[in-house]
Amino acid sequence: MKILVTGGAGYIGSHTVLELLSRGDDVVVIDNLVNSSRTSLDRVFELCGRAPVFYEGDVRDKELLKKIFTEHDIDSIIHFAGLKSVSESIRKPLEYYENNIVATISLIDEAAKYGVMNFIFSSSATVYGNPDFVPISESSKIGGTTNPYGTSKLFAEQILKDFAACNVNFNVTILRYFNPIGAHPSGRIGENPNGIPNNLVPFVSQTAVGKHKVVSIYGNDYPTLDGTGIRDYIHVTDLAKGHLAALDHIGKHGNYNSLQFRYWTGIFCS
Image (tube, rainbow, N blue to C red; front, top):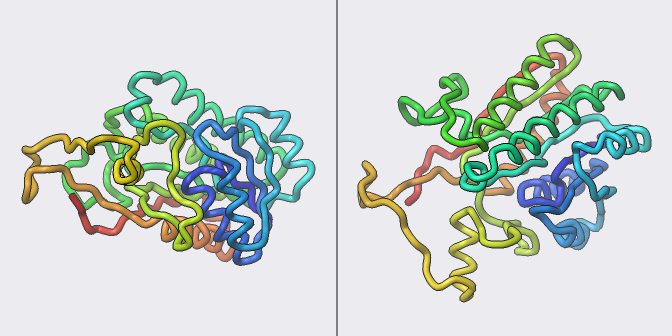
């Protein structure tokens, strides 16, 4: 297969690109490198001896998308590209709606023109808002999001479902992640964000090597054993392989229109 991976130089994207190339798929990556680095793709080549075709650019650039779809016979799309900081989204909501919603519409529109009808969307567990109970399932109620990031993912999901409802050949799989962590076993690629990390593990790692003085623990009255918050974490390599499984499901079954899966372990850590 030839797969277009948007945001393929990012944390989850680069691990997924590595898994795809390692099993023999051809990969095309588009990434604007705002929150990622070309270095991750160079290291993907080091690890598997294969490299994706790379385009530096924005998914909202329809002329670039036309060029990609014209030059490559794309079978499927994995859409990672977007902004992902909850705290930043509260300060910059319009940027999140522009990058996460408008970009998704642009991608769907151009893909459909070229007959690319298999679409895997990188969503988030934030679409569940504050759930009434945990653990949650794919059938749990979504909505009531608590920040613009979660709302942008929720709206993008609905757009994909609506498009699938009126296009019987369009197959979309929505993957709702909890908290990806970790790195490739080689240590050559992992979570290395530009600037101060928003996620816990890279911040702890940077503190351990002296980039930050302390790690602050917020909250002491949660209903947990020690009063601190807990999270469900999933290893990034497992998550990357989950995307390959979703691709394989499309290849075997197809014409199912819309499916939603959540990726978590069910084991909570403080």
